Length: 110
Image (tube, rainbow, N blue to C red; front, side):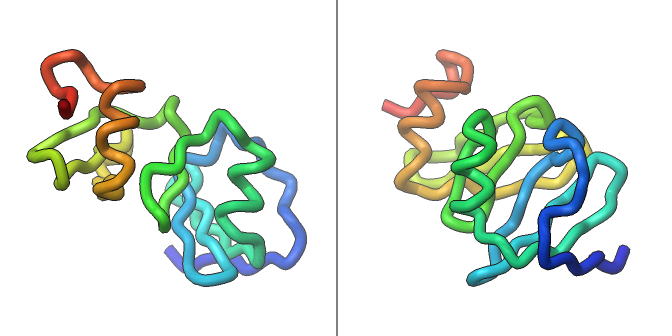
C-alpha cells in the first residue's frame, strides 16, 4: 500500500499505531489496518511524545500492545513478531535490557 506523506502530524490515535520505522529524518508510521503514513518527524520525536512505545532498534519504535511474541536466538540475535505477522529485528545492544523487561524467564539473555 502506498504511503501517505504528511508534514504535520496527522490526526490519528497512537493506539492505532503498530510500529514506526525510521529513515534518516523521516519515519513511516504503520497503522493497525495496514496503512502507512510518511512523516517528516524522527523516531526520537515520536518516542518523546509516546513514552509507552518501546525503542527496540535504532530504526524501530513499537507499540507493545501489538507485540505478539519476542524471539531470542542468541545473545546478539533477536526479533519481535508483531500481531500482523511482521518480524522486526531487535538491536543487539538492546536485547539484554528488553529480555529482562518483557520476555519470559526462559527466553531471557544472561
